[in-house]
Length: 563
Image (cartoon, rainbow, N blue to C red):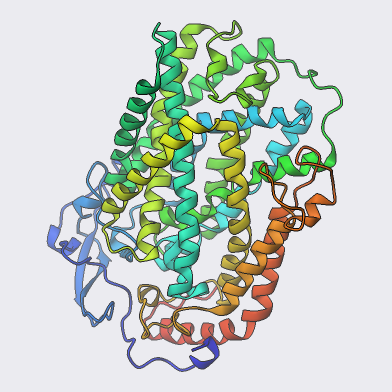
């Protein structure tokens, strides 16, 4: 049934909020009235109480107790750092939302001051850009982190993950399709990190005097996948804590690297630079690997913020914790790429650090050891999001079990990638695939949110059956599906892929040059424009009608806030 047909308040939805006491898990009210610190253990000593209120709630047909915040209770042990988080895509109750907007800055900064962005900067220099061109691309491309900030605003209101809220736009079943695309994307980023971890381990082995063969590579992959499993298995609070710990060590390491790089940088190594077509290809590369490539993860972490969190603060802290450090780190990578030119082209991005005299050997060893640790922490974000995305697809496993499934998949793909591809080729091919689906998706997701007046009915997002507000016809909302397909086609027509495709598939890009080295890339802009505009045209009436129903439900539940 379309949104237009849901204009009256459903009789079977009296519930005020989704369950605050997940099944099989004690509620906060049972934990007593002890004081608690946030999972970040900042020593605030703020005490709260959870008061249990019995109200009917229909999530998968069940009635449960909910909790509301009161001044003397405790945070469930499983929500603390270094305990196994029990939440998956379920609703996060208000009394368990320990975070503040600035906590997002700490987490994202820990994910941004890291080796991957250093390598991305070095790869940019392989496009043929002057250093000035590369610097402009880095700055402009990282402005896309405003998108991540905006795509983190739904979590506090909805209390669930990105692909929990995505059910409103696509329908529960339609959202499973897009969630599958995201799952593939997250696994791809995890494999990218594992390739770098294995590469760093191999270089350290060579520097220690050993010649690693095929068996050593296999052992490195197995060990890396095993270690990578730990943080996302424990969950959100642990990831946030560890990423925050890693900020200062890496700031120091990159500062030292900057000192060495500044002595050897060749800013005028490229005299003439690249054409406007190649510039646009570099921009697509940078945008995808910066803010756009994280948009599908934002609400997985912002859902731990209270509903009344400042939207300006969320966007501001997310941008500060991502764009600023990434501009600096990518610029350093580009700087190193002016004199250590094979970092961006080598099959192993770290191999060029073995036989060079620019950076002292002792520092390279320290740098790579810390890089490995950091890469494990970064991969934990992707593995966490891929786990909850697997749940959103409909796989009936707990979040931490989904992490195990994803780890096995990563193991198989990483073994293939390590033995059959170079890092540079893998990364560029992967970016092309991500652009095609994520550009139209982010536009549809945000247009839908705006049409429904920037709010959702939290308990309705938890329903995947016919009794749910967002179910529509057979669990699909066809305007979103149509807009997604047309947006993907539009993105493909403007894509300049690193792999070969017939020109009828990308006629717009093909018209700008003779091959992939000379063509422009309009894929992101076309995907966003077509996806968003088609959805706006097709869904305007239906979503506006459903927004009225939402407001009736939220008002009845005492959750309606204007603006």
